Image (tube, rainbow, N blue to C red; front, top):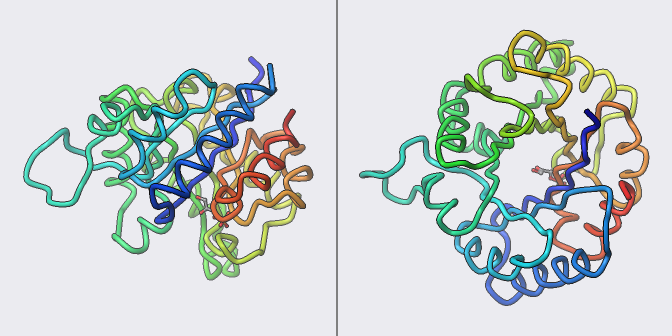
Length: 250
Ligand code: 13P
């Protein structure tokens, strides 16, 4: 089965009501008027905007997701948001295990796996992030680290319909540095091999690249065989840039 490309925007902790709704509306309108395109487009605003943005996206093909969820459905977890709450607000996807959460909140593979399970329980597609640090790459351990993250973070029952993997080398996030096309090709093929025996139909699971994806480098990255789309941070906050990245998949 051919894998349809997914262009996903992770707004991170950016987006007040005015600018967030303007950005979402611009993208929803462009997508609605573009006719059939060869990609899916997803935006993941902060939790405060999920319901509003989902309302704006209704009636257009624009998909909306959360950036994180708690593993539990509800309870005494001050400040956390459950996968069920995101689904209730109109999300269809949720990012789990982003390196900023793995670092800032010390999330282990086991925690990320529990969150991905929660996403599935709530009927959300889990976007499971993996990626090595600069030190790990310099030590020649990038493939080993990513294999461990893939093995430890994917829950039972993960498949191409309910799970997407995002390879985001930590050193490439927000730095303007990107992995070389050869490195990305090698790592995505490595991840695909790691999926063998772990998930049903590994050939159907989308593997996104993330880390300083911009209009200027997206064409080269999206042309790589095992790259099934992008997870975009900074450039997803500018409608023209995010759209230009998506256009490379048209
Ligand atoms: P940048 O595109 O800003 O490097 O961020 C990538 C990322 O972390 C997306 O989740």
